[in-house]
Image 1 (cartoon, rainbow, N blue to C red):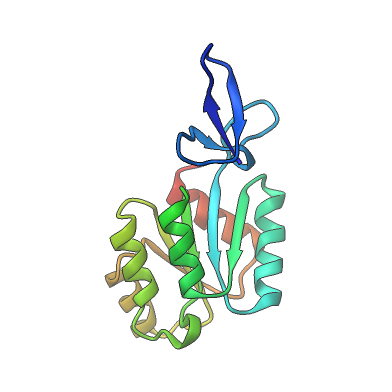
Image 2 (image 1 turned 180 degrees about the vertical axis):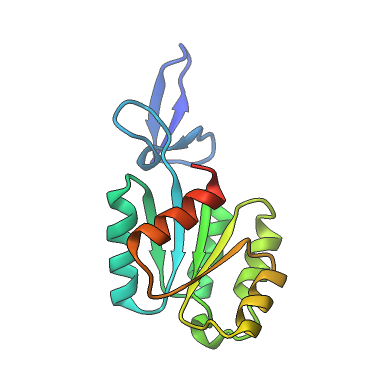
Length: 152
């Protein structure tokens, strides 16, 4: 579902994304766009907790557990931030980060991972990520890192 301009300038809900201005679910009730985050995490409990924390900030969170789902969504939807776990599906070469960066060279990528050896961090940043946050961390630290990268 999206919002498109009608013939008289009226905003209309449409099922097709072909002439979308922006997704309906990316709006506050008063028409103000909110931040949209693609969260890629293979641990279900972590996905649920992170979504809860970020949605409490008023942000739209799309959470997936696989590289393929993340790439499909990134190719079809506009996101303000990609929040990635390291080693999704055994990905030790950061293929997801590299693919996201090739599909979308501008959207910030923040790794949120328990893999915090210096080599993990260096490799992630070299693949195009703008930040790396060790988990676990406080909800405030996660929110602050996201706000810093998205300048919100």
